[in-house]
Amino acid sequence: EILRKFKISNGMTMMEAVDPDLVEIYKSSKKKHLNKIREKSGAGFSEMLFFDDDPNNIRDVTELGVCSILTPSGVDEEAWRRGLETFASKKSGRA
Image (cartoon, rainbow, N blue to C red; front, side):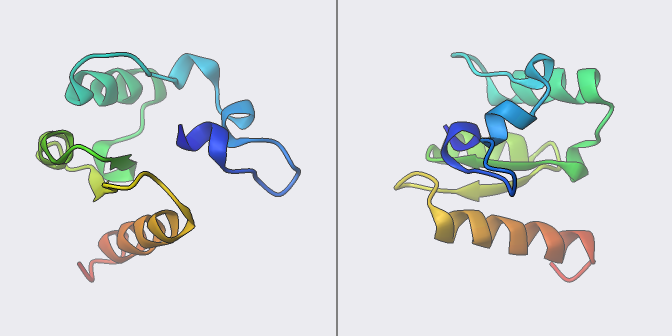
């Protein structure tokens, strides 16, 4: 959802800018999704930011070390900004 919702500076959606091989959208464990993304991309869990409206998914991926943001009403601009701020705070060691 989020990849189609937001546009980057050149007017493309985030979905258009992301390597399609890294997109993991299907019904399954979010841990499985993020493990596959980690394997394909080489990015560590601490380099990932995850949004979801399901507290169970948030709990599961947080256990992996992923910065996770609960969005009960979906991802909007406020949730996106909160996620970026939380991620930056964790990366700088302030969280």
